[in-house]
Image (cartoon, rainbow, N blue to C red):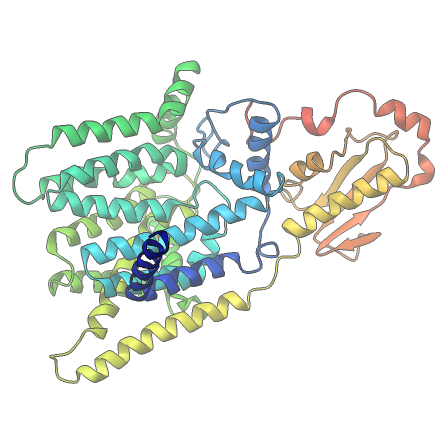
Length: 511
Protein backbone atom coordinates (compact mmCIF):
# COMPACT_ATOMS: atom_id res chain seq x y z
CA UNK A 1 0.00 0.00 0.00
CA UNK A 2 2.78 2.42 1.01
CA UNK A 3 4.75 1.47 -2.09
CA UNK A 4 1.73 2.18 -4.32
CA UNK A 5 1.23 5.61 -2.70
CA UNK A 6 4.91 6.39 -3.18
CA UNK A 7 4.70 5.43 -6.85
CA UNK A 8 1.66 7.70 -7.32
CA UNK A 9 3.50 10.60 -5.65
CA UNK A 10 6.58 10.02 -7.79
CA UNK A 11 4.45 9.92 -10.90
CA UNK A 12 2.72 13.20 -9.97
CA UNK A 13 6.07 14.83 -9.26
CA UNK A 14 7.44 13.64 -12.61
CA UNK A 15 4.40 15.02 -14.42
CA UNK A 16 4.79 18.35 -12.61
CA UNK A 17 8.51 18.42 -13.39
CA UNK A 18 7.96 17.79 -17.10
CA UNK A 19 5.23 20.42 -17.32
CA UNK A 20 7.43 22.99 -15.55
CA UNK A 21 10.80 21.92 -16.97
CA UNK A 22 11.72 25.33 -18.36
CA UNK A 23 11.27 27.26 -15.13
CA UNK A 24 13.03 24.49 -13.19
CA UNK A 25 16.01 24.71 -15.56
CA UNK A 26 15.92 28.50 -15.27
CA UNK A 27 16.02 28.40 -11.47
CA UNK A 28 18.93 25.95 -11.53
CA UNK A 29 20.79 28.29 -13.91
CA UNK A 30 20.04 31.33 -11.73
CA UNK A 31 21.28 29.60 -8.59
CA UNK A 32 24.41 28.30 -10.33
CA UNK A 33 25.32 31.80 -11.57
CA UNK A 34 24.90 33.20 -8.07
CA UNK A 35 27.04 30.44 -6.51
CA UNK A 36 29.79 30.46 -9.14
CA UNK A 37 33.19 31.35 -7.62
CA UNK A 38 31.39 31.98 -4.34
CA UNK A 39 34.48 32.98 -2.37
CA UNK A 40 36.47 34.61 -5.16
CA UNK A 41 33.65 36.99 -6.10
CA UNK A 42 32.70 37.88 -2.54
CA UNK A 43 33.60 41.58 -2.45
CA UNK A 44 33.90 41.67 1.30
CA UNK A 45 33.80 45.25 2.60
CA UNK A 46 32.85 47.38 5.58
CA UNK A 47 29.14 46.62 5.13
CA UNK A 48 29.87 42.92 5.52
CA UNK A 49 32.03 43.67 8.57
CA UNK A 50 29.04 45.47 10.08
CA UNK A 51 26.81 42.45 9.37
CA UNK A 52 29.26 40.19 11.17
CA UNK A 53 29.44 42.60 14.09
CA UNK A 54 25.64 42.64 14.31
CA UNK A 55 25.48 38.84 14.33
CA UNK A 56 28.30 38.60 16.88
CA UNK A 57 26.43 41.05 19.10
CA UNK A 58 23.26 38.92 18.93
CA UNK A 59 24.81 35.45 19.24
CA UNK A 60 27.84 36.09 21.44
CA UNK A 61 26.84 39.14 23.47
CA UNK A 62 23.19 37.98 23.65
CA UNK A 63 22.02 41.45 22.70
CA UNK A 64 18.79 41.43 20.62
CA UNK A 65 19.03 44.38 18.26
CA UNK A 66 16.26 46.66 17.01
CA UNK A 67 18.30 48.33 14.27
CA UNK A 68 20.91 47.52 11.67
CA UNK A 69 23.66 49.84 10.48
CA UNK A 70 23.30 53.59 10.18
CA UNK A 71 22.48 54.70 6.64
CA UNK A 72 24.22 57.47 4.73
CA UNK A 73 21.62 59.83 6.21
CA UNK A 74 22.73 60.63 9.73
CA UNK A 75 20.34 59.43 12.46
CA UNK A 76 18.48 56.97 10.21
CA UNK A 77 19.16 53.24 10.48
CA UNK A 78 18.23 50.29 8.32
CA UNK A 79 15.94 47.70 9.87
CA UNK A 80 17.40 44.50 11.37
CA UNK A 81 15.53 41.85 9.36
CA UNK A 82 18.22 41.20 6.73
CA UNK A 83 20.82 40.72 9.47
CA UNK A 84 18.65 38.24 11.34
CA UNK A 85 18.09 36.31 8.11
CA UNK A 86 21.86 35.82 7.85
CA UNK A 87 22.18 34.20 11.29
CA UNK A 88 21.23 30.62 10.25
CA UNK A 89 23.74 30.81 7.39
CA UNK A 90 26.49 32.12 9.69
CA UNK A 91 25.75 29.23 12.06
CA UNK A 92 25.84 26.78 9.15
CA UNK A 93 29.38 27.87 8.28
CA UNK A 94 30.73 28.19 11.83
CA UNK A 95 30.19 31.99 11.98
CA UNK A 96 32.16 32.45 8.76
CA UNK A 97 30.82 35.38 6.68
CA UNK A 98 30.82 33.19 3.57
CA UNK A 99 27.52 31.77 4.83
CA UNK A 100 25.77 35.05 4.05
CA UNK A 101 26.48 34.59 0.34
CA UNK A 102 24.25 31.50 0.41
CA UNK A 103 21.37 33.65 1.66
CA UNK A 104 21.60 36.19 -1.18
CA UNK A 105 22.01 33.40 -3.75
CA UNK A 106 18.71 31.92 -2.57
CA UNK A 107 17.01 35.33 -2.49
CA UNK A 108 18.21 36.06 -6.03
CA UNK A 109 16.84 32.72 -7.22
CA UNK A 110 13.57 33.47 -5.41
CA UNK A 111 13.39 36.74 -7.38
CA UNK A 112 13.61 34.79 -10.64
CA UNK A 113 10.78 32.50 -9.47
CA UNK A 114 8.74 35.53 -8.39
CA UNK A 115 9.16 37.27 -11.74
CA UNK A 116 8.02 34.11 -13.50
CA UNK A 117 4.96 33.81 -11.28
CA UNK A 118 3.95 37.48 -11.34
CA UNK A 119 4.56 38.06 -15.06
CA UNK A 120 2.72 34.82 -15.87
CA UNK A 121 -0.29 36.03 -13.90
CA UNK A 122 -0.30 39.54 -15.38
CA UNK A 123 0.60 38.59 -18.98
CA UNK A 124 1.50 35.01 -19.92
CA UNK A 125 3.88 32.17 -19.11
CA UNK A 126 6.06 33.18 -22.06
CA UNK A 127 6.44 36.68 -20.61
CA UNK A 128 7.18 35.09 -17.23
CA UNK A 129 9.90 32.85 -18.65
CA UNK A 130 11.51 35.69 -20.60
CA UNK A 131 11.40 37.98 -17.56
CA UNK A 132 12.93 35.26 -15.40
CA UNK A 133 15.63 34.63 -18.01
CA UNK A 134 16.49 38.33 -18.22
CA UNK A 135 16.82 38.60 -14.46
CA UNK A 136 18.65 35.28 -14.11
CA UNK A 137 21.35 36.05 -16.69
CA UNK A 138 21.78 39.84 -16.65
CA UNK A 139 25.31 40.74 -15.60
CA UNK A 140 23.89 43.63 -13.60
CA UNK A 141 21.33 41.61 -11.63
CA UNK A 142 23.75 38.73 -10.99
CA UNK A 143 26.26 41.10 -9.38
CA UNK A 144 23.51 42.94 -7.50
CA UNK A 145 22.25 39.64 -6.11
CA UNK A 146 25.75 38.74 -4.92
CA UNK A 147 26.00 41.87 -2.74
CA UNK A 148 25.38 40.91 0.88
CA UNK A 149 23.71 44.16 1.90
CA UNK A 150 20.20 44.97 3.23
CA UNK A 151 19.21 46.62 -0.08
CA UNK A 152 19.86 43.41 -2.04
CA UNK A 153 16.21 42.13 -1.90
CA UNK A 154 14.81 45.41 -3.31
CA UNK A 155 14.03 43.84 -6.70
CA UNK A 156 12.28 40.92 -5.00
CA UNK A 157 10.16 43.50 -3.14
CA UNK A 158 9.32 45.43 -6.31
CA UNK A 159 8.08 42.42 -8.30
CA UNK A 160 5.60 41.55 -5.54
CA UNK A 161 4.59 45.20 -5.25
CA UNK A 162 3.81 45.14 -8.98
CA UNK A 163 1.66 42.07 -8.39
CA UNK A 164 -0.18 43.75 -5.50
CA UNK A 165 -0.94 46.80 -7.67
CA UNK A 166 -2.24 44.55 -10.45
CA UNK A 167 -4.50 42.78 -7.94
CA UNK A 168 -5.87 46.14 -6.77
CA UNK A 169 -6.51 47.25 -10.35
CA UNK A 170 -8.53 44.06 -10.80
CA UNK A 171 -10.29 44.60 -7.47
CA UNK A 172 -8.88 41.42 -5.93
CA UNK A 173 -8.46 43.02 -2.54
CA UNK A 174 -8.59 39.80 -0.54
CA UNK A 175 -5.10 38.95 -1.73
CA UNK A 176 -3.84 42.47 -2.43
CA UNK A 177 -4.06 44.05 1.03
CA UNK A 178 -2.14 41.31 2.91
CA UNK A 179 0.66 41.50 0.30
CA UNK A 180 0.67 45.29 0.54
CA UNK A 181 0.80 45.02 4.33
CA UNK A 182 3.86 42.76 4.24
CA UNK A 183 5.64 44.94 1.69
CA UNK A 184 5.00 48.19 3.59
CA UNK A 185 6.37 46.58 6.74
CA UNK A 186 9.54 45.59 4.88
CA UNK A 187 10.41 49.05 3.51
CA UNK A 188 12.38 50.14 6.59
CA UNK A 189 14.25 46.83 6.56
CA UNK A 190 15.30 47.21 2.91
CA UNK A 191 15.44 50.72 1.49
CA UNK A 192 13.53 53.89 2.38
CA UNK A 193 13.45 54.85 -1.32
CA UNK A 194 10.68 52.27 -1.79
CA UNK A 195 8.35 54.70 -0.02
CA UNK A 196 8.27 56.62 -3.30
CA UNK A 197 5.92 54.12 -4.93
CA UNK A 198 3.52 53.84 -1.98
CA UNK A 199 1.13 56.45 -3.51
CA UNK A 200 0.60 53.98 -6.38
CA UNK A 201 -1.40 51.81 -3.97
CA UNK A 202 -4.09 54.50 -3.79
CA UNK A 203 -3.95 55.07 -7.56
CA UNK A 204 -4.34 51.34 -8.28
CA UNK A 205 -7.24 51.05 -5.87
CA UNK A 206 -9.01 54.01 -7.49
CA UNK A 207 -8.61 52.42 -10.91
CA UNK A 208 -9.85 49.03 -9.63
CA UNK A 209 -12.57 47.33 -11.61
CA UNK A 210 -16.02 46.77 -10.13
CA UNK A 211 -16.96 48.08 -6.71
CA UNK A 212 -14.77 50.69 -5.04
CA UNK A 213 -15.58 49.65 -1.47
CA UNK A 214 -12.61 48.56 0.56
CA UNK A 215 -12.48 44.96 1.74
CA UNK A 216 -12.20 45.97 5.40
CA UNK A 217 -11.26 42.53 6.70
CA UNK A 218 -8.38 42.13 4.23
CA UNK A 219 -7.28 45.71 4.84
CA UNK A 220 -7.03 45.11 8.58
CA UNK A 221 -5.02 41.94 7.93
CA UNK A 222 -2.65 44.06 5.87
CA UNK A 223 -2.39 46.74 8.56
CA UNK A 224 -1.72 44.05 11.16
CA UNK A 225 1.11 42.59 9.06
CA UNK A 226 2.65 46.04 8.60
CA UNK A 227 2.56 46.71 12.33
CA UNK A 228 4.01 43.29 13.12
CA UNK A 229 6.98 43.77 10.79
CA UNK A 230 7.43 47.31 12.13
CA UNK A 231 7.71 46.26 15.80
CA UNK A 232 11.51 46.87 15.91
CA UNK A 233 11.02 50.35 14.41
CA UNK A 234 8.17 51.22 16.79
CA UNK A 235 10.10 50.05 19.87
CA UNK A 236 13.24 51.88 18.79
CA UNK A 237 11.39 55.12 18.16
CA UNK A 238 9.59 54.90 21.51
CA UNK A 239 12.88 54.31 23.33
CA UNK A 240 14.74 57.06 21.49
CA UNK A 241 12.11 59.82 21.31
CA UNK A 242 11.28 59.39 17.60
CA UNK A 243 14.91 59.92 16.58
CA UNK A 244 14.53 58.55 13.06
CA UNK A 245 11.33 60.48 12.40
CA UNK A 246 13.10 63.73 13.33
CA UNK A 247 16.15 62.76 11.24
CA UNK A 248 13.96 61.98 8.25
CA UNK A 249 12.13 65.31 8.49
CA UNK A 250 15.46 67.11 8.77
CA UNK A 251 16.84 65.25 5.75
CA UNK A 252 13.83 66.19 3.64
CA UNK A 253 13.71 69.83 4.70
CA UNK A 254 17.40 70.81 4.77
CA UNK A 255 20.11 70.82 2.12
CA UNK A 256 22.01 67.50 2.09
CA UNK A 257 25.08 69.14 0.55
CA UNK A 258 24.80 67.78 -2.97
CA UNK A 259 26.86 70.20 -5.11
CA UNK A 260 24.62 69.43 -8.10
CA UNK A 261 21.18 71.05 -8.23
CA UNK A 262 18.56 72.41 -10.60
CA UNK A 263 18.63 71.24 -14.22
CA UNK A 264 22.05 69.63 -13.65
CA UNK A 265 20.51 67.39 -11.00
CA UNK A 266 17.79 66.31 -13.41
CA UNK A 267 20.45 65.46 -15.99
CA UNK A 268 22.54 63.54 -13.45
CA UNK A 269 19.54 61.58 -12.16
CA UNK A 270 18.53 60.57 -15.68
CA UNK A 271 22.16 59.70 -16.46
CA UNK A 272 22.44 57.38 -13.43
CA UNK A 273 19.11 55.75 -14.27
CA UNK A 274 20.38 55.29 -17.83
CA UNK A 275 23.52 53.61 -16.49
CA UNK A 276 21.32 51.11 -14.66
CA UNK A 277 19.31 50.44 -17.83
CA UNK A 278 22.43 49.98 -19.96
CA UNK A 279 23.94 47.69 -17.32
CA UNK A 280 20.73 45.63 -17.18
CA UNK A 281 20.70 45.23 -20.96
CA UNK A 282 24.45 44.66 -21.28
CA UNK A 283 24.71 47.47 -23.85
CA UNK A 284 27.18 49.44 -21.72
CA UNK A 285 30.03 47.60 -23.48
CA UNK A 286 28.99 49.09 -26.83
CA UNK A 287 29.64 52.70 -27.96
CA UNK A 288 26.00 53.66 -27.53
CA UNK A 289 24.56 56.65 -25.73
CA UNK A 290 23.11 55.22 -22.52
CA UNK A 291 20.61 58.08 -22.38
CA UNK A 292 19.31 57.22 -25.86
CA UNK A 293 18.99 53.55 -24.86
CA UNK A 294 17.00 54.63 -21.80
CA UNK A 295 14.77 56.95 -23.84
CA UNK A 296 14.21 54.14 -26.33
CA UNK A 297 13.03 51.82 -23.56
CA UNK A 298 10.65 54.49 -22.21
CA UNK A 299 9.21 55.03 -25.70
CA UNK A 300 8.83 51.27 -26.01
CA UNK A 301 6.75 51.30 -22.82
CA UNK A 302 4.44 53.94 -24.35
CA UNK A 303 4.20 51.87 -27.55
CA UNK A 304 3.25 48.72 -25.60
CA UNK A 305 0.48 50.64 -23.83
CA UNK A 306 -0.75 52.09 -27.14
CA UNK A 307 -0.82 48.65 -28.76
CA UNK A 308 -2.50 47.19 -25.64
CA UNK A 309 0.29 44.70 -24.96
CA UNK A 310 0.26 46.38 -21.56
CA UNK A 311 -3.22 47.07 -20.23
CA UNK A 312 -3.85 50.82 -20.02
CA UNK A 313 -4.40 51.07 -16.27
CA UNK A 314 -1.30 49.02 -15.52
CA UNK A 315 0.58 51.10 -18.08
CA UNK A 316 -0.34 54.29 -16.19
CA UNK A 317 1.00 52.67 -13.01
CA UNK A 318 4.32 51.80 -14.72
CA UNK A 319 4.72 55.31 -16.14
CA UNK A 320 3.98 56.86 -12.74
CA UNK A 321 6.43 54.42 -11.11
CA UNK A 322 9.31 55.71 -13.27
CA UNK A 323 8.15 59.32 -12.91
CA UNK A 324 8.07 59.18 -9.09
CA UNK A 325 11.64 57.90 -8.86
CA UNK A 326 13.14 60.28 -11.42
CA UNK A 327 11.25 63.31 -10.07
CA UNK A 328 12.05 62.74 -6.40
CA UNK A 329 15.76 62.15 -6.85
CA UNK A 330 16.00 65.08 -9.26
CA UNK A 331 14.64 67.36 -6.50
CA UNK A 332 16.16 65.74 -3.39
CA UNK A 333 19.37 67.46 -2.29
CA UNK A 334 21.19 64.25 -1.35
CA UNK A 335 24.12 62.95 -3.40
CA UNK A 336 22.63 60.21 -5.56
CA UNK A 337 24.03 56.70 -6.11
CA UNK A 338 22.83 54.24 -8.74
CA UNK A 339 21.55 51.69 -6.23
CA UNK A 340 18.90 54.18 -5.01
CA UNK A 341 17.27 53.70 -8.43
CA UNK A 342 17.12 49.89 -8.36
CA UNK A 343 13.45 50.17 -7.41
CA UNK A 344 12.71 50.99 -11.08
CA UNK A 345 14.47 47.98 -12.63
CA UNK A 346 11.42 45.70 -12.50
CA UNK A 347 9.54 48.09 -14.83
CA UNK A 348 12.30 47.87 -17.44
CA UNK A 349 12.40 44.06 -17.14
CA UNK A 350 8.62 44.01 -17.71
CA UNK A 351 8.95 46.21 -20.81
CA UNK A 352 11.66 43.98 -22.28
CA UNK A 353 9.79 40.77 -21.46
CA UNK A 354 6.48 41.86 -22.98
CA UNK A 355 8.23 43.24 -26.09
CA UNK A 356 10.24 40.09 -26.78
CA UNK A 357 7.26 37.85 -26.04
CA UNK A 358 5.17 39.77 -28.57
CA UNK A 359 7.89 39.17 -31.19
CA UNK A 360 8.09 35.45 -30.42
CA UNK A 361 4.31 35.00 -30.46
CA UNK A 362 3.89 36.75 -33.80
CA UNK A 363 1.89 34.44 -36.08
CA UNK A 364 -0.68 36.34 -38.12
CA UNK A 365 1.35 39.25 -39.31
CA UNK A 366 3.14 39.39 -42.62
CA UNK A 367 6.73 38.31 -42.23
CA UNK A 368 5.96 36.74 -38.87
CA UNK A 369 8.77 34.19 -39.26
CA UNK A 370 11.32 36.99 -39.52
CA UNK A 371 9.79 38.70 -36.49
CA UNK A 372 10.10 35.48 -34.48
CA UNK A 373 13.71 35.11 -35.60
CA UNK A 374 14.34 38.66 -34.42
CA UNK A 375 12.90 37.78 -31.02
CA UNK A 376 15.05 34.64 -30.78
CA UNK A 377 18.12 36.64 -31.83
CA UNK A 378 17.48 39.34 -29.20
CA UNK A 379 17.06 36.79 -26.39
CA UNK A 380 20.13 34.81 -27.48
CA UNK A 381 22.23 37.95 -27.92
CA UNK A 382 21.21 39.25 -24.50
CA UNK A 383 22.06 35.99 -22.74
CA UNK A 384 25.38 35.49 -24.54
CA UNK A 385 26.61 39.05 -24.01
CA UNK A 386 25.72 39.06 -20.33
CA UNK A 387 27.13 35.61 -19.62
CA UNK A 388 30.32 36.55 -21.46
CA UNK A 389 30.67 39.64 -19.27
CA UNK A 390 30.08 37.61 -16.14
CA UNK A 391 32.45 34.76 -16.89
CA UNK A 392 35.25 37.13 -17.95
CA UNK A 393 35.00 39.38 -14.89
CA UNK A 394 38.38 39.70 -13.11
CA UNK A 395 38.43 37.77 -9.84
CA UNK A 396 38.65 39.99 -6.80
CA UNK A 397 42.09 39.78 -5.13
CA UNK A 398 41.35 42.08 -2.21
CA UNK A 399 38.04 40.70 -0.93
CA UNK A 400 36.89 37.90 1.31
CA UNK A 401 39.63 35.31 0.63
CA UNK A 402 42.52 37.72 0.97
CA UNK A 403 41.27 39.82 3.89
CA UNK A 404 40.61 36.63 5.80
CA UNK A 405 44.06 35.28 4.85
CA UNK A 406 46.00 38.42 5.82
CA UNK A 407 44.46 38.49 9.31
CA UNK A 408 45.13 34.74 9.67
CA UNK A 409 48.76 35.40 8.73
CA UNK A 410 49.09 38.14 11.35
CA UNK A 411 47.60 35.85 13.98
CA UNK A 412 49.96 33.00 12.99
CA UNK A 413 53.06 35.19 13.05
CA UNK A 414 52.14 36.84 16.38
CA UNK A 415 51.67 33.42 18.00
CA UNK A 416 54.97 32.14 16.60
CA UNK A 417 56.78 35.18 18.03
CA UNK A 418 55.01 34.84 21.38
CA UNK A 419 53.10 38.13 21.14
CA UNK A 420 49.80 37.98 23.12
CA UNK A 421 48.51 40.96 21.11
CA UNK A 422 49.38 43.13 18.14
CA UNK A 423 48.64 46.49 16.57
CA UNK A 424 47.47 46.82 12.98
CA UNK A 425 48.11 49.84 10.81
CA UNK A 426 47.02 50.49 7.25
CA UNK A 427 48.61 52.11 4.22
CA UNK A 428 45.49 52.42 2.10
CA UNK A 429 43.17 54.87 0.42
CA UNK A 430 40.55 56.38 2.77
CA UNK A 431 37.92 53.78 3.61
CA UNK A 432 39.98 50.80 2.43
CA UNK A 433 41.21 50.30 6.00
CA UNK A 434 37.70 49.16 6.94
CA UNK A 435 36.43 45.61 6.63
CA UNK A 436 38.86 43.63 8.79
CA UNK A 437 37.52 43.74 12.32
CA UNK A 438 35.18 40.76 12.14
CA UNK A 439 38.05 38.61 10.84
CA UNK A 440 40.27 39.92 13.66
CA UNK A 441 37.62 38.88 16.20
CA UNK A 442 37.08 35.51 14.55
CA UNK A 443 40.81 34.78 14.64
CA UNK A 444 40.80 35.72 18.35
CA UNK A 445 43.57 38.19 17.63
CA UNK A 446 43.82 40.66 20.50
CA UNK A 447 44.72 44.15 19.35
CA UNK A 448 45.95 47.34 20.95
CA UNK A 449 46.32 50.94 19.76
CA UNK A 450 49.58 51.66 17.96
CA UNK A 451 52.45 52.48 20.33
CA UNK A 452 56.21 51.83 20.35
CA UNK A 453 55.71 48.99 22.84
CA UNK A 454 53.36 46.73 20.83
CA UNK A 455 54.38 45.01 17.56
CA UNK A 456 52.79 46.69 14.54
CA UNK A 457 51.67 44.76 11.43
CA UNK A 458 50.92 46.95 8.42
CA UNK A 459 48.42 46.07 5.70
CA UNK A 460 48.96 47.73 2.31
CA UNK A 461 46.34 48.23 -0.39
CA UNK A 462 46.82 48.78 -3.23
CA UNK A 463 50.39 47.53 -3.64
CA UNK A 464 52.79 50.26 -4.77
CA UNK A 465 56.53 50.19 -5.55
CA UNK A 466 57.20 52.88 -2.94
CA UNK A 467 56.03 50.55 -0.15
CA UNK A 468 58.10 47.40 0.29
CA UNK A 469 55.85 44.64 1.59
CA UNK A 470 57.31 41.57 3.27
CA UNK A 471 54.55 39.36 1.92
CA UNK A 472 51.84 39.78 -0.70
CA UNK A 473 48.48 38.07 -0.26
CA UNK A 474 46.47 38.62 -3.41
CA UNK A 475 46.34 42.37 -3.98
CA UNK A 476 47.12 43.01 -0.28
CA UNK A 477 50.58 43.53 1.14
CA UNK A 478 51.77 42.83 4.68
CA UNK A 479 54.73 44.40 6.47
CA UNK A 480 55.87 42.49 9.54
CA UNK A 481 57.05 44.27 12.71
CA UNK A 482 60.72 45.00 13.28
CA UNK A 483 61.03 42.18 15.81
CA UNK A 484 64.26 43.55 17.29
CA UNK A 485 62.40 46.54 18.73
CA UNK A 486 60.12 44.53 20.99
CA UNK A 487 60.82 42.93 24.34
CA UNK A 488 58.56 39.97 25.18
CA UNK A 489 58.09 41.01 28.81
CA UNK A 490 57.21 44.58 27.83
CA UNK A 491 54.84 43.39 25.11
CA UNK A 492 53.08 41.01 27.52
CA UNK A 493 52.64 43.84 30.01
CA UNK A 494 51.26 46.20 27.35
CA UNK A 495 48.85 43.51 26.13
CA UNK A 496 47.08 43.28 29.49
CA UNK A 497 43.63 44.79 29.73
CA UNK A 498 40.87 45.21 27.18
CA UNK A 499 40.90 44.25 23.51
CA UNK A 500 40.95 47.37 21.36
CA UNK A 501 39.15 45.54 18.53
CA UNK A 502 36.18 44.85 20.81
CA UNK A 503 36.13 48.18 22.63
CA UNK A 504 36.76 50.73 19.90
CA UNK A 505 33.58 52.09 18.23
CA UNK A 506 32.92 50.83 14.71
CA UNK A 507 31.86 53.31 12.05
CA UNK A 508 28.16 52.78 11.23
CA UNK A 509 27.56 50.43 14.16
CA UNK A 510 25.55 51.72 17.11
CA UNK A 511 25.27 49.85 20.40
